Length: 260
Length: 307
Image (cartoon, rainbow over all chains, first blue to last red; front, side):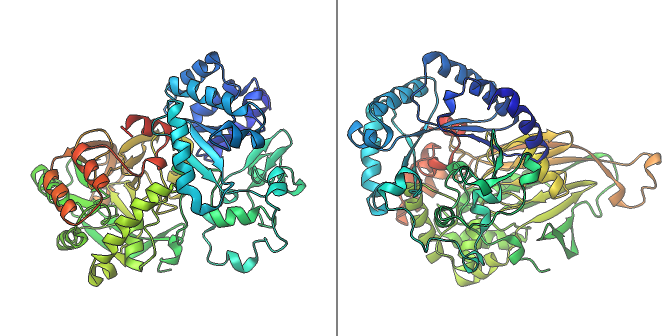
């Protein structure tokens, strides 16, 4: 989207009480307007960019640091890496991407950013501790001493469906599963994503025709039915696209405690 | 302070309504209340707070929840607070301990943070007696105060969710204005994140995180933070109608002061060690730097800490 295309959405977001912004793609830095768009976002609220960190130049990172310093809000970078070596990362992300991503991470660190290194869990959950330890060692070598790491559960769509056999025919969220479930931890209960096509329910489902809810944010407020198989992953893990600082684990709604 | 006999309902949330200035003098003055949260079993800081508030002549004190966690002997904070009879809002920790939930629902996502949260929760749960658990279970999730015409909503995380994080650098003015509008209030006060901050997202409307007295705010100092909220009350002019009752007084200003509280942190550290609580927690008490729960911090808050 061009800078001009985003302006009306920012204006509407403020009227609706927006809390924070996330930018994703593809690779968002392919868009030459992104720094300008981020500048507008950071005047309104915090912004997070989900990036592969391969397109950072010293000039770009300096410009981003200036945007950060001019705002009272946080500017976050979530850098997607899928392994802690070229041997484990590059088969998933492409040849040479590991070295380029680590160069991007070093540029961010030098500018005082603390990127959140994000990896999709392509191993059994019991191996988390060991994998994290290796990851931390690798990042320490790149100069990141207390790295921020976010592990994502595997969404079995696209390439990952081919690798991990996809969802089974039973992986659907049923009506009875929602009873008593705290839906406020699902991103689709409190977030929307804007693309050139309009407003979608969530970033995972953008390619589904029914994910398009309208042209304006205010058209896209109704509750979305969790009818896709990928919804199962959000149901199990909560707000997996949001940062840890914005996550809130399930909690009974207050009105269940209320006297009326 | 006068507790009204009824509960008020705000967007489905039942809250206790308190007309703070009922019976208060009619002269123009500042009415000052103390606000604190996140006691985390730090009964020594709580005792220091009560002394400090009394010395300063604060009109009343309010606790915003999370009585247990982190520190030793959880019954002590409960007992001190029950003895004072002060109004208390329920935090996620109180909700979990009171209802016997499996964890604290602090909202951590990192395995290391969750490891320490579990140690802390299991210790607190095992060492809280059943009478205190029943008491924690029944604490209200919110309080509505009225000082003059100033409406103040006290909650733990946010008015809409007890364990929602509202950090200084990730909470937009637009969102704060939306909350203030939705909950029909002039001031919202919370504590959950343990880091104090204040902003006026639109003129005359405020969000305050009153800080936590249980552990220092990750800035290398051993002191902890509580808040004095001052509301200016003046007699209405003649054009505003008769001033025969105190509820006609107008609030024309709000001041927020964060206070640093000294307490015997070496004694707390010693007692935490004697109770077998993690060395990492004790380091935080002794150094003023957070050693755990860092993964939930936004970038700017994280950059201010040591780890």
